[in-house]
Length: 322
Ligand SMILES: C[S@@+](CC[C@H](N)C(=O)[O-])C[C@H]1O[C@@H](n2cnc3c(N)ncnc32)[C@H](O)[C@@H]1O
Picture 1 (cartoon, rainbow, N blue to C red):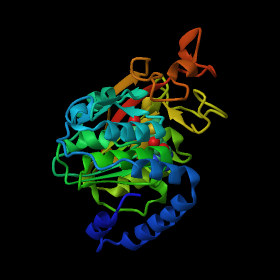
Picture 2 (cartoon, rainbow, N blue to C red; picture 1 turned 60 degrees about the horizontal axis):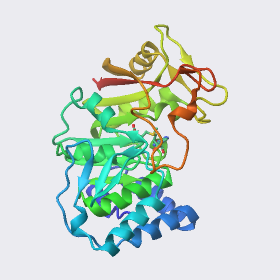
Picture 3 (cartoon, protein in one colour; picture 1 turned 90 degrees about the vertical axis):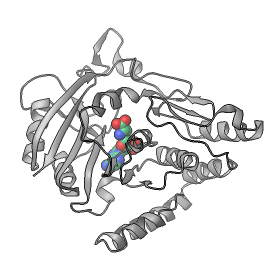
Picture 4 (cartoon, rainbow, N blue to C red; picture 1 turned 30 degrees about the vertical axis):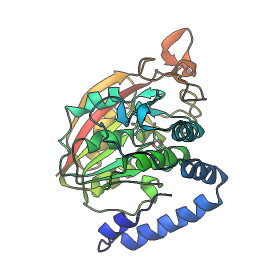
């Protein structure tokens, strides 16, 4: 869907070029066969070219254009495509006057991390689990050299494709791959973001080692994941669901997470924030057709999930490569 030839050209002499080209070709064949992917691609293709507008990326609501710039037909096509791509989990956005009030107020996480991380100007950045690209767009405001997102879930990958048709950022790419499917880009990135993904991973230490190897010496990992309260070196391993999610494998304490990072070879590991998720940050809106936080918590005790586990809280960890 997205033309990645500029990225492959940039990486033409890199050792991972051929392997990546092969994985992307396989993925493209899959997308051509996959009914959901084809429907998304058609919805996006139906959006006519829109007038050029300067994006505003340094504000909570990522914005491009105004309603006055669009004809009624352009507005309707854009609105239909955006609606066909629901659920919009990450945002908010204002796209030519259409306000996407996403399930997550993602600006809050950005506010928690922005003042703590190494400045992104001039850096090569990887965002693993980049969803629709809200954070990639926020990062772009800092003028990194290159932004690469990885997003394997079709709905969110195609959301990025639609947004990129509007924002047209030449140095920003998203590949429809899991981190584990991507060839190892040894020592390439200056900053790697891995936010909201580690609890979905079956073998978190293997993933942490691979993240370290993807960074150059002195590079920074920005890791955000679910944690449980407590000081012990323990992790919750739910046998079935956690907050109704059936793909959550390990939720450590902050101390346990720190030990995982150190044992994976990271240095200068520190926790800069722990925040319990509330309905201010995650809630049902018109842009999602699924359940949200309130449905995942015990109706009589918001400190517990419906399964009786500690309610979601998230730690933000920074770590470096020696
Ligand atoms: C909970 S969302 C977090 C999105 C965003 N990073 C954030 O912090 O708000 C997790 C995202 O990671 C993606 N994901 C899950 N497993 C992944 C993997 N192994 N590699 C890359 N992305 C993954 C999911 O499709 C989803 O979009």
